[in-house]
Structures are given as C-alpha cells and as structure tokens.
Image (tube, rainbow, N blue to C red):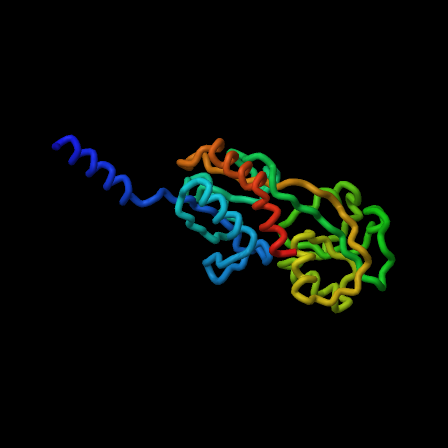
Length: 237
C-alpha cells in the first residue's frame, strides 16, 4: 500500500510539473510575412507559425523573444535563447549548432516597367539598387563588384514603396515578401522578377540549450514530411 502511494505521488508530481520551454529568438527588424511584431511581442507571421510547430513537436512551451540584431548572438551564446530560425551560418558568425537546411528562400531583383528589364546581373552595373541596410547581397556583390550601387533603406517595404512611386528602378528583395505584398494589394508596375538565387535556410541552436540538435532535426524532418512547412508558406503567398 505504501509503495502504491509513493508511486501515485510520483506520477502526480510528474503530471503537474510544467513543461520545459523552447525560447525562440526573432530580430526586431523582421517584417511581415516573416514576423508580425508589436513592440516587443511576436504576434504572428512565418517565424511565429514555425516556432509553434517546433514547440509542439518538442513537447515544450513556446516562449518568443524579440531582440535587436546585435543582441541575437549574445542571447544564443548565453543560452538566453534556444533557437534562431530562417538563417544561414554566414549571416550569423559564431559557434552554433546548425540544423539541416529546410526552409526555402528565393532572392529576387524587381525592376520597374519604365526601366529596361535586366537579362542578367551584369545589366545592373552602376545602377542604383534598392537594398536593406545591414543586409548582404553576395550574388550582386560578386557579379557587380565595384559597380554594385546600393541604395540602402531600413526595410523591404520602403523599397517597394519607392519602386511604386518611381523613386527607384530596381529593388533586391525576397520572394516571400514580394508575394505577400502583392497579396495585400500593392500595385506594382514591374517586369517579371529576376531570380538572383535560391537556397534553404536553417535554425541556429545554442550550445547552452537543453534541446539537442538531434531533437530539433527530427522535429524539422517530421514537419517537412507532413507538409507543415509547405502549409506555413502557402498561408502567406
């Protein structure tokens, strides 16, 4: 009888124990459809949907932290955050555990109809290209070298507004964002976009996380196999 009581108490304690947390980091400068940020709170977007899906697979309570880009690496290094997703290793110098590549990204060059349509990147030599401050554009940098003329602003949204207003003829952006803005009703008189490059982004996992890389990779593989990643993307296209 005593043994049964001890076992029941242990089971009760296990059942009532709070689930471990999964702390997912998001950069404050991230725009919809990637992230709907209200102050310091992540309310929606692809980052939010992906984080929820991963937390469910890992049986953890989701906690999101919205931080400036300069603090993201510090949070991962210290273990303040577990995961940062939709990144590539070259975008985040440091010693992190990287998941398998899984989330598709396409970079585009969008040109106004009243400008000649570029057939390749070399056609853009010495032409101002709308870019986002702090972001790198390796394909353009390699192709154009000293003839790559950046016209930096703080967001992709500003670049597309400039394009619509005729204040710039060429903009470098990402397909996810471009498709979302068209779905939101933006009116853009442009040539068919020129694909600059395609790749699969990953998640960076802190070495101080209680989640293992194998666990995260298994969760990602299940989401891909179930079609969950494709569904998340389709919600914003």
